Amino acid sequence: MKLGIALSGGGARGGIELGILYSLVKRYHIKIDVITGTSIGAIIGGIYASGMEIEDMINFLYLFEADKYLKDISLLISNEKGIRKRLNSYLKFYRSINLLTDREYLDDGEKILELLKVLTKNKDFEDCEIRFGVNAVDLISGKEVYLTKGRLYKAMRASMSIPGIFKPVEMDGMLLVDGGTVCNVPVSLARKLGAEKVIAIDLRNKEELKDFSNGFEVLWRAGTIAAKHITDKELKKADHVIEIPTDIDILDFDRMAECLELGMNYDLFPAIRKILQ
Image 1 (cartoon, rainbow, N blue to C red):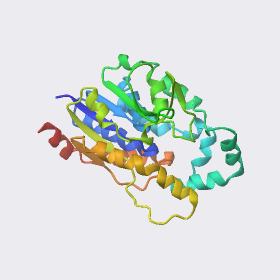
Image 2 (image 1 turned 60 degrees about the vertical axis):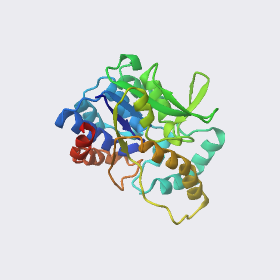
Image 3 (image 1 turned 45 degrees about the vertical axis):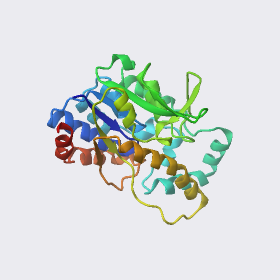
């Protein structure tokens, strides 16, 4: 039986996924044959698939300082709770408005690209012992794209390109942005890569928005509705879905260690029992 893990996008909450991977591999000694990911899930999955020991990944997480690798987006990282509030405050700031009117992104992603290149040792997908793939969205065609060949770090960078935040990635005539724009958990891709059983990890916040204080909040919500429905359908294709509620914001990178602990402390026995049936 080939086991696949589909990792979702979720920014700083990706620490949860790393914690769950640690438990599966080190505590339960479960062999993972396929990993797929979106955005932060693509990053965690790609680094692990490239061969880095999971203990080293955890050590790096504890040392990670987001503002060292993110340029203008670093102004989004603060102690104020709520990504929508933070983005709203940032977009009202004069400098950010200037940036967004002069170009189509806040951060060119070059620093994070170089970091991913180092962490994956500049490996190709074909160099991985674990089958690995990520999804992204082509802005030109509007279609979801599966990336399973070439340099890992380039594909990972494409999958995390949040529109308007990071510069889109040009690849094979496409202009690629965050896979979560369309589907936040690539379960189908795991099946395509040979997984017979799939555990999906969904990091989305299930909080319902009922009150909107301004137009930006309306636009933010409207932009996520289509992806929500597609992702919900995708999750039905998984054999087991892990959801761990948390109020930790996707940009609270200083709380990634808390997310890691949430993942490591999660009871995986029901998931393991289900996939082994």
